Length: 443
Image 1 (cartoon, rainbow, N blue to C red):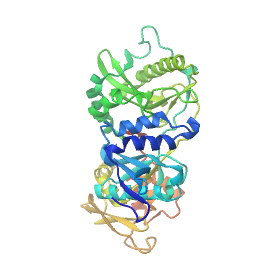
Image 2 (cartoon, rainbow, N blue to C red; image 1 turned 135 degrees about the horizontal axis):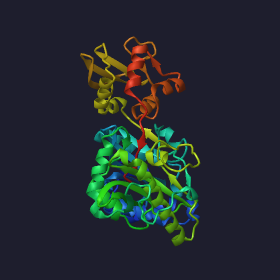
Image 3 (cartoon, rainbow, N blue to C red; image 1 turned 180 degrees about the horizontal axis):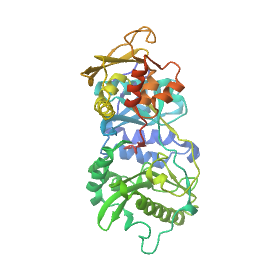
Image 4 (cartoon, rainbow, N blue to C red; image 1 turned 45 degrees about the vertical axis):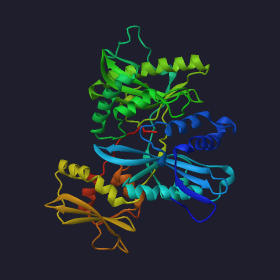
């Protein structure tokens, strides 16, 4: 893979890049935290990604190489994973470690790396890319804030329940302990149950769970601690939190799940008591006050909803991109069909066209049932074209498809979201309900 005919070449990563990429990324990430010194946690993370991560191979990195020195001067990695949206598999590339050496900035290297990534994902059929980062910056590269990744209240440490001596009071016999590698199969089975529900999730198989429990080096900034919810010897759920307190003294929670939803009232009590114990242990070992538990969870996640009261926070956003809206809708075809069946809705025409002001998706129906989604050219003027049923800006359609906003919300925000008639509005409102986000990405 080559870039423009100039000083820089864009190429795939190689195993032999590990030391150079660790050095590069450690010198450009989180420099405000280290006072300009290399960040050891970033270097360890890069080393782990290139040294045995179950979801990453060196080729997943993209590198801008200086042809004068032969050294990497900018890079990113696309972490491929399968998310599940209300039970439907959705390939996703999570973009991380986007960085350029200071002396090489201003040469459009980030733009060129993203262009190479988007081209690769289009060829490989990965319809969705996500990234966190600088406010507004990634909008310039075709991304839209289309997912919220937290917003649950921050709970003061003093509000957490105390662990009782018998460790079961108020928890129905449920307790929490550190996970062991032997728990991986049970955790994978719980994840599969959650993936079959109605949320947007990123399930892990047993190999990935083993890696999360015991595969990362201690300094890896992406390392999390995994605990399991048990009833006797029966694994009923899991809880995933930070391996240390944040600079603000907060214990970060990134994931929690129960095998049986009915367990949540007791499970939440057991989990919050465990988080209180862990926070106190971190406080003692680090000499840093334990101030609060900060869940990076949907505000309606059971662990947040059933927890002690805390300070509400504005949700942060993930940037999201799809290069092919029709392909995304085609992947969601089983889900759309199921939602319309549940509402007893049948489309009376052979097709429904959703135009995204440039491209369009044609949804084909047989006897009222959705049978195919194909990409077609958009109309010159979709707002007046008689064959167009809905004109929806691409960012709005992305938010609808991922369940970030409902159709009434989109209509309120985007004046250029236009529907032909009330029947179209009813059908699309049913197709795109709000979906809870329970994603812990596989980074």
